[in-house]
Length: 473
Image (tube, rainbow, N blue to C red; front, side):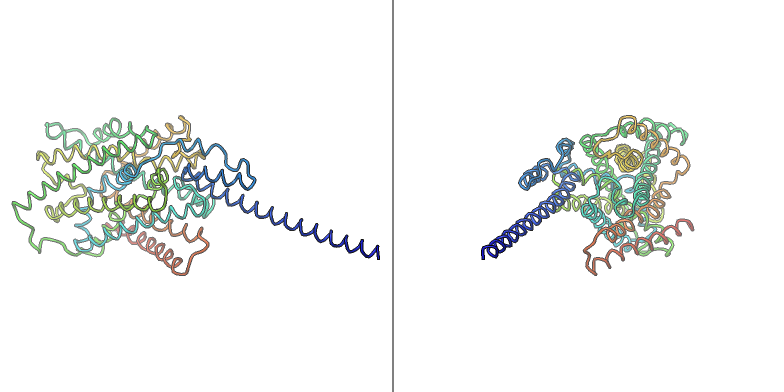
């Protein structure tokens, strides 16, 4: 009996021991799971530099036995200057506005009035949606939206290199268009005092003394200030052009219905205009850098900032394009300022305002080029000023020289805008965001998958048709 009692007690003790061990194992699994969640949310906090989130994560992590879950580097990164909502809106606008404003009236002439209204609204909505979609995809995958990390998350090293190439080309072609636009504006100003300067000499001089110096700045806070100056220049140019066109219509009357191309003259003409309409709202390359450095990175605030920026850009492009088209009609040029008399006071002010706009917008469009390429070449996030002085300034000089050489080779502003819109914009704004979204997201519904597929199909369809029309033209 005694032996049986001892066996019973031993069995009970063994059962209790196993129960305790099982509870300890379950506890360890819980702590391990919590650690993984903390590390993931820590990555998100680091990505958006959310100091309050990082602080709360430290408190929570300590309570579950993680004494140093988050390194102090997050606190150092939080010292990086962030942007207010107003600064972010202005920076986004300077990604949208610039020489593209000068080509809107030309695109209306090619596409017709009615299709142009539809295309401008659809382009704005599509580009806004894909910018936010790309940001959400980055968050879901733990990629830094200020760099091309999402390409690597989705398709490996090859995906990252391809994304870097496209981000660089989008900003680079805009830089090239600004070189041409600045030379045209300064040339018009010099013509007032009877000075005729060789176009090549003028282009190089504008590039060297006006465009290159601001690109050596690295602080987003200072860039935001200069963006405000550029935005004011764009507003002044818009007001002057509208006054000129409004005065002309008041004197001569609204053009006859038969003189206005309400519909596209041909299907080929329509698809020649489409790339420019797509391009003027395409800010996926630089927009990620701007939105990722907001002070308030809550989703509702990011959406609000994006909505304001795109709404203002649509209004300005709409007013600029249609006011010019209804005056110049079928004579509208790729750069509408060339339609205005060079000695007209409003034209003179517009050209000075254009110089201000393109000089500083050139600097803005250089940012995604530098951020993407420095990340690929040196593995450093220039959005956080991680590159060394040699790396930053060395690449900056090479980028500027490349923009000059391309501008010397291609001097047609409308052609540069069309190439950028047809080839690069369709890939950056539609095909890549759809591909990343479908590849990275794991819990998509059938409707969400269908939407992603349709977005990618639209991008490929537009890419093929627009590119063929440019070649044919």
